Amino acid sequence: MNSLYTLVSVPLLSETQSQSEESHHEHNSHKLKTTLFNPLKHIMTNDKNNKRIRKLTPNETHSHPLLISPDSNSDDPSIEIGMNINDTLEIIDLDLSRLIISPIFQDPFVHGLMRKILFNYLLISNKDNNADDILKQTYYYRQGFHEILAVIFLQFYHRDTTITEEQIKFILFIFIKLMDPLRLTFYQESQLLTWQQSYFIRILKLCDLDLYKILYGDTSMNNHNLIWLIRWTRLLFLRELPMEDCLVIWDHILTFSYSMDVMVACLVISILVVVKKDLTKIDKDEQMDNDDIIEYLLQFDKRGSKLNVLQVCQLSGLLCEAWESGHWKELNKIVLNHIRNNNIDPNRKRLEDKLRKRVQKIIE
Amino acid sequence: MNNEDYGYDYDYLFKIVLIGDSGVGKSNLLSRFTTNEFNIESKSTIGVEFATRTIEVEGKKIKAQIWDTAGQERYRAITSAYYRGAVGALIVYDISKSSTYENCNHWLTELRENADDNVAVGLIGNKSDLSHLRAVPTDEAKNFASESQLLFAETSALNSENVDQAFRELITAIYQMVSKHQVDMGDSNGNNNGANAPKGPTISLTPTPNEKKKSSSNNCC
Image (cartoon, rainbow over all chains, first blue to last red):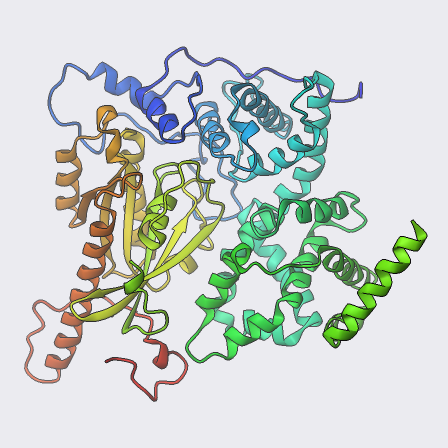
C-alpha cells in the first residue's frame, strides 16, 4: 500500500460560482459547491452595465489556445485534444452530477472524493507533461472515465463505514490499472480506428464470416460500426449489460491474461455471436438496413436479452487463446461449436440444467 | 404520440442530428420528443445515442431518425459517418449558460463542413424553464438564427415546452424542401429555370422501406 500514489488535492481556482453553473446544477438536481472560474462569466460580469446586445462572436477568445497546438492539424485523429484545468474540472463536475448508477454519487462528499480521484488520475497520466504547475497543465479527461471509476468506487464503498485515504489510493490504483490500456486503445480516436482494423475486423472475419458480412459487407461503411463500438468499448459494456455481468467481465479483463485490445475484441464478438440470430434477422429483412443494425446495437440494453455472461467470457477466452497462439483457423471452429452447443433442444437443455443443479447440491 | 407511431409504415425517413455542448440537454430533448420522457438525472452521452419517432406532416408519414452525440467529443474520423445522410440538424444550447451559445458557431461550422449543403438547421435554446437564470437573450439568438438562416426555438425538455413544435418545424421544413426539390426535378425535365432549386448536391434521403433494398415497390400511400 505504501507504494501507492500520494493524493493531491484539487486546487481551489476561485470562490466565484457562476450563475450558469448554478443553473446547470439546478437542472441536474445536484447542488454542489463548485469553485470554478468561468472566463465567460467574468467577461459578462464586467460588461454588466453595457446594455447593448452581446455579440455572438466576442472580442475575447473563448477557445483555449493550448487546446491544440497552432501548428497541428485539428482534423488529425491521432491528436488527443486536451483541456485546461477550468474546463476539465467543469466537465468532471458535470459528469459526476449525472452519475446515476447509484444514489451515493449525489452525496457531495462522495462527489468530492470522485473528483479528487479523477483529478489525481489525470495528473498521474500527465507525467510526461513538462508544466510543473498543475494550474497550467493540459488535461486529457474524457467523458466515460467517471463511469468506470464509479463502478470501482462502488466496490469499496460501504454506507456505514468511512472510506479511508488508503482505500481511496487503492481505488485510484485499480482505476489506473484498468484505465491505462483502456484509454490508450479506445479513448483516442486514431487508436480506436487502428483497433477496429487490426483486431476487431480481422478476428470477426475469422470467427464468423456471416457476422462480418452483416457488419462490414459494405466496405464504404466501415466507420459506421464505430458509432456503437465507441460506447461498447469505452465503458466496457456498462451501458449494454447489467452491472453484475459487467463486473464478471471486468474481472476477466483485470486478470490481463490477454491484451486489452484482443480481449475486448473477443468479448464484443462473443456477444455478437450470442445475438447472431437477431442480427441475421435484421440483415435479411428487406425493410431494414445498416442503420437498423446500429440501432439494435446502440439499444442493446433495451432488448432484454439475457446473456449468459460466463459463457460469453468462456467463449471470448477461447477466442483470445486461439488468436494469440496463432491458431487462427480454430477461431471459426470455436464459434461454430459454441453455436451448436447452445442450439440444443430446449427440453434437453432443461434436463441438463436440472441435473447440473442436482449435482451441485450434492457437492455442496 | 402513440397514435402517430406507424412502425415501418412510413413515406419518408429523415435523419436528424442533435449537436451542441455537453450538458445542454440534447438527450432529454431526444427522449422528450421520441418517448415523451424526461430524466432529471440523465447520464452523460458516451459516443452516440439514437431514437426514432414517426409523425405525420402534410398527410405524409415521416419517420424521424434522431442521432444524439456526446457534447464533449469531436469524432473527427467518425464525423462523416455521423453526419452522413443527415437532412436536418438541431444545434442546441443552454439559455442559462452563455458559453454553450457562443460555441454554436463552432457547431454550425462543423455541420456545414460535414453535412450535405441542403441540410435544414434549427437553433434551439433549451432549458427555457430556467428563465430566471437566463444568460442568452432571446433576441440575440433569434437574430443570429435569422442571419444564419436557421430555424429558431426556445424549448424546455423539462416541462415539454416547444419541444414537439421545434422538431415538427424542422421536419416540416425538410419535407417542404424535399417536396420542392422533387417538383423542381420534375420541372427541370421541362422548362424550369431552376432559380429556386436547391444548390449543391441533392438531399440524400434514405429511401422508403420498400425502396431500401429493392426498389421494385412503392411504400407511398
